[in-house]
Image 1: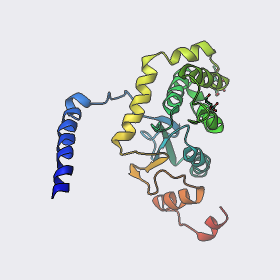
Image 2 (image 1 turned 120 degrees about the horizontal axis):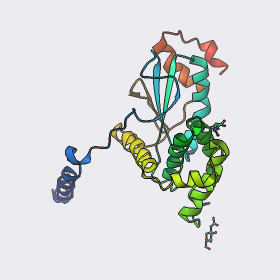
Image 3 (image 1 turned 90 degrees about the vertical axis):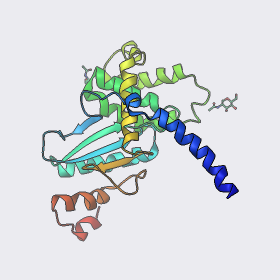
Image 4 (image 1 turned 180 degrees about the horizontal axis):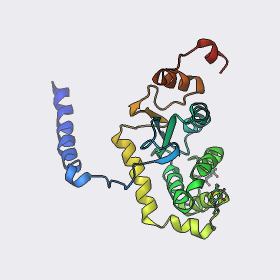
Length: 230
Ligand SMILES: *[C@@H]1O[C@H](CO)[C@@H](O)[C@H](O)[C@H]1NC(C)=O
Ligand SMILES: *[C@@H]1O[C@H](CO)[C@@H](O)[C@H](O)[C@H]1NC(C)=O
């Protein structure tokens, strides 16, 4: 009983506090002009395709592992799969929000460089892990990311760097994060297919797993001998 009371008081205080912060009239995330995310392929609003929403952290190894099989699935099902990527920076990856912001800057300066930059982050993500950057200033990490980004964006370094000062790229990166939170995303990669969260969220899916998920939705008979050589 004493234990319950000890738990109940902090819980009560927490609920009291959270009622204040979650007042919907105060806590509404700004609603963007277009649905959140970067469209990788297809137009989920127009075509009769299966929509995959991928919440990826550019600095997360499992997100990196999940990307090539998803690309393979996109090729395999083309044009019946739409893929929208939502950058989702995990708070324990110290530089992930900066990387997500860089993606928004790239998207604004040159839309077709968004995914090339995401792939560059996957390729060089180890550079930006917590430990190797522990003694680096935030400014020098931004500088390093900008130098990486301009190789695919095609803008000048100073133009890219000024994107880090623009509040709209900060807002855009926050919106993606908040949108993920509102969908219950708590790790990366998280995948939703036609709005439904796939099991084993937080782990990469390989191509045969994508086939096991998508084939039945499209009415394709899943043949074990087809899957066995994947
Ligand atoms: C960061 O600085 C500390 C103290 O000088 C040093 O021990 C550590 O090896 C440095 N880390 C890196 C990744 O350079
Ligand atoms: C935009 O980015 C793409 C992909 O990196 C690149 O091929 C293209 O040259 C860039 N456009 C400009 C105007 O630099």
